[in-house]
Image (cartoon, rainbow, N blue to C red):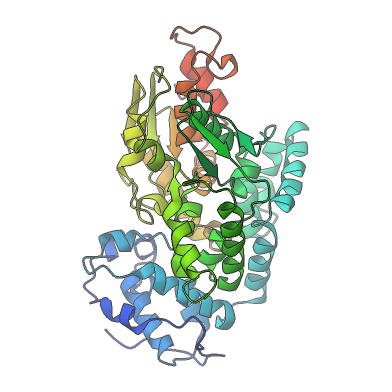
Length: 464
């Protein structure tokens, strides 16, 4: 491979969080990753492929000056980990990327606007109290009937692209569900679990947390949701803000260790993937290293947990065709592919359709759609096309960022197809005879059930 040409840079990588040369050497530059890398497919540039980026990481680790161009190619990476699933050599690209991004946070060559955007994102999204203020503002706008104006193209053309993207992905608001610190089992008690509420999930998708609690309690589990819990650090770790991520991780470990439960259930793919890697994140922390490993072994995705648990709550029929999107940090980051489908197959009448690009990134990728909006928009459009091609009445995934991105991409297409979390579909099935608001007043299955379900699960209406 030809040497990468480095313009005169401003800095070089340091010895903090160094890139592991052994991991770099694992890559044999075979190129099997290329057709699976979304950014390589968009840009057709070797340096926007995993193979090219690993080569670039090696040059920087060996003392090459950091340039604007090098920073750009590494920032363009989604961190979707599709290359990890495709790699025949088992290259630990996730660890390489995390170390590299930690270096870029200190030495990356970015414009003042880029740095300001990133600072603004991390001053807001990891903090639920601040997000709730934003949500309250959005709620007031929606109640005033101005939601379409806020998310419309006309306003988007008059504000910076990152702000326009944030407005575009902002979901329609609803009254927030409040999760109690303890929700007791509604059937014979089978155990007790803890639940991570999340930041974006708890603020913008509180109904997902409510659905999670309803399913778990119906299945006989007490659910602890410590009110003191904070951000898990997933966004920070993904963006290279490693010290910040470690602080968040330590606080989460402290909080959930006190609960004494054997399982910490997570309903956000990005959060779950990050929490399962706390051992790596805190490996150099003499106080937390072993605690982090133990904690990570207790973390389980909600679909992973339910697939390993014999169901006791009745599943009532849902005559519905749904398009299932594999969230990257669920399928690539955690290796969870069969479990959501297995759980959904328990629902009579439900047809689950895979997307033609089922494991391709939708473009959300943590903060990616805010800092790389043009690329994210192209990937979102591809995902919207794949969803629409299924002819499904509902799109579902196991990650809030994906659901925001797919909803926005569908809206851009002029489609009102609703998007929901996987657990919401199961909750709707279980609640058939008890939730008149969700599924209708009659316990019998009628033609009106699916339309009403769709109205409650998503923003739009069923496709004709």
